[in-house]
Length: 162
Length: 252
Image (cartoon, rainbow over all chains, first blue to last red):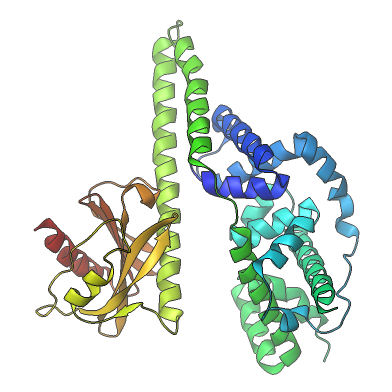
């Protein structure tokens, strides 16, 4: 089962629930098996299987709730409260938990694009295929997602500092 | 200085997704603009920290087995249909699909595994402390792994060869411990990765497979239940020569 462990990790981040992630991964692999003919040899297998798991999630109950925020690309995320980069202050004492907490709090469309780019190290082209969005949207959404995450980290750091 | 247009390119810069020409101009700008350089660094740090923090959840063995069983059951009805008049055609098609899936999956898995090891090799070379045990003596390096690995391996005598052993380090590959041995040849450094057969996560023939990945020469083979992968920026002949030495020693 190719990418099984990585897809499970991705599913856990999407659903934020291990039991739901297991259901999601199992269903996605069933769909992949059933729809393997729709996979065109020579195209990107990884993007194809991630697209299946993501679409399966979006049509699930949890996914339908989460996707309400999907049209918010045009909305600018909150800017960091201070002009200086939060990283310069934060990184020395930043715990993995702080990043995990910020990642979990992001809207799903921001969370998934950060995971595909930074964890799965997909190219913009692969992300475009996995999320079925144009390349330009990949770049703008990624930029917004990162700004939103930095704002959350900065807000978290201010909370700690108080 | 108006850095707006430059800032828009920094995400793609951090993601190594800029076209070559733009990469040069952004590099030049970063050398002259401390503010943008700090922003680029922050993005890279954030990217690295996210990668480490996000690899968080691992599936249980029970769950993996459950999905495998479910997939096998799902495949059975296809075989039942195959006795119908189109038996021959359906069987051939299924066989073709199965072979294609297996071959393709193996190819993808092998490529990913090699890419991961390649990253480990590059990270080792970039590290200030690249190796855990620093020694040119095989009788020092090999015993260092005792108790750290669930397997053992042999190191060749190199005094009559052009290679020098630099040392070794413990790695984790697919959640299992493995060995990375570092060798030197004319200022080129070569990594030999040794991992357990089942932890390699990719099926590989017993034959020696030589390839080129991102300009690096790679040679891989299976021997005595262990998977060996040699990686270096030197030429394929040198990589093969080191592979031959390792194979000869292990075969004794």
